[in-house]
Image 1 (cartoon, rainbow, N blue to C red):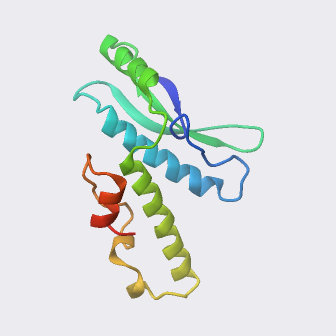
Image 2: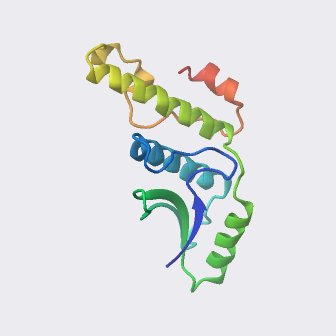
Amino acid sequence: MQYIEIGPVPGEENCAQVGSPDYTEASLRECEVFRRMLYRLFPVPEGLPVAYVGRTHPHDFGNYREVSIRYDDASNEAVEFAYEVERSAPASWDSIARYELAWYERKRAYDVAVREQRLQPEEVPPQFGTLTPPNLPPNASFSEMLASNPL
């Protein structure tokens, strides 16, 4: 298997900085949202030996994470697909990814409030009682997503 590094987030977006106090949590969240976004934008054809994966790499200031495309270089179709994704990788978050990032931020705030006992578990809104954001319609705008799934 071979890997092509796509990045921790879309190319023109800000990302968590290695060495910052919340790097681990923030980078895991960003990479997971970016990985799901790549699957939405570039679905892997069934049977093609390709996957979007999060990877950790060493750095002078600590480990850093980014999303890679893993592919079998014995398959010409997989190689072509992987390089096409690298060439076409998005520059910015799509509306679903922006919603998911906001959802994770709100969920984190509620989790902190529960841990600090400012809220009882039954006081946490149901949309934050799950581990993942809701399933969102692919063509909705950010404002439509907020209207149907308030944060």
